[in-house]
Amino acid sequence: MNSPADSIKVFFKRLTQSKYFKSYVISAAVILVGVVLIIITPWQTYTPDEDFSTPTPTLEPGQTPDPDSTPDPALSPAPEDPPEPTPTPIPGEYNPLTGEPWAGNKDERPWAISINNYRDSLPQQGIAPADIIYEFVTEGGHSTRMLALYQDASDVGIIGSVRSAREYIVEIAEGHDALFVHASGRLYDDAIELNGNPVTRRGTLDVNGKWVGRRDSYRRNTLKMQLDATMVVDGVGLTERISEINIRRDHEDYEQTLRFKEDGTPENGLIAKSIEVKFTTNSKSTFFSYSDTSNRYTVRQYSRDLIDTVGENETDIILSFTNVLVLQTDIQLGVNDAGHSRVRTEGQGTGFYFNGGRYIEITWSREANKGYVYKLTNGEPLELGIGKTYICIVSTSQTPIVT
Image 1 (cartoon, rainbow, N blue to C red):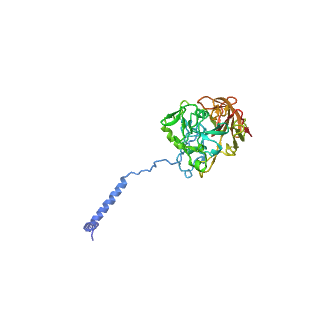
Image 2: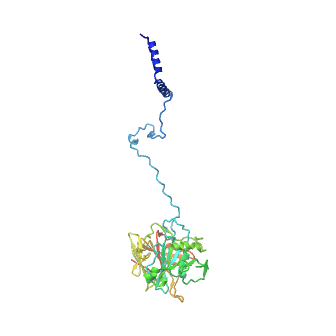
Image 3: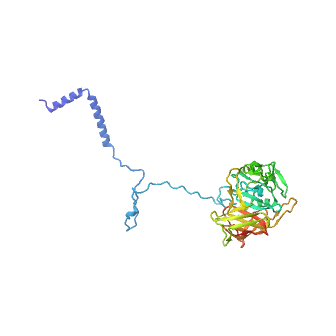
């Protein structure tokens, strides 16, 4: 019988002679290396990059934790992105003609356009975007004309019909340091040519077919209007072409005289739901009706609403205004050989201010080349309501009828 030592020798002899000996050796070596690596590698504890644990509240001496004040991590909402900051308005970013928030350049000169207001020239076009509209008598007092002011006309389409200039219309435009657009007309100073364009020394632009004005075929052929009711301009064209003329585009040493506040309703004002403004004793009147819903006055004349139409097959816009001013002054009818009127725009005078369905008496003053200054009867400055304004210039003998 073989001893244990002999048995071991026989086993290893047979093992080494086996055809699988090399495979056994390689497998054993791999297992041995793996065991060694596991033994010599140190254990590491996982630490997250961020600590999402609930912070422990700091307690004052003697204070016990409040179980309700400790948030349950399972119920805590997921972190949210911080809200976008609200842009801070830039001080002074407002329309100087209306007081409304505005992103344009308030130091740029506005546009003032002479607008026809004969009965047979209606409806007008492009007057709804105007910031201020003046109305005053012309010729012998049997009709009126408008002056429409736009702080920015770059997005206004067709404007018209454009009519001729008068001395007092130019003076009002000068008070706003405006670029005055008209279709010819008698001015009481000499016209000069600038770059081939008729521009007076006062900076008025005659668009009578020589600049950007044109005769509107729809008004002429479809509405059968007379020629003097067909001249129109394009607000976009005005803005583009003004760069071609050597004329000042921005204000220089100009002081804005209009003041605004959110609610311009006059304190202790009298009721003014309906207003009739007569421009001459036996001639044209303009009517204003106050709406409690819109807080504005709509306008009627010639037994119809004052509307703006942008052309054929378009919806008419009924004009309405936050502020209505009636300025009383000296007017002389038909003083020259052409039958034109004279209207005093400088000096001082009285008037009425309407806003929010109420009105008060005011005073006005104006120096040459400056804007109108409005005051309360106690001498304090008048603050208009933020919004558009309609201004009627009438004789001192005409007082509005208010109900």
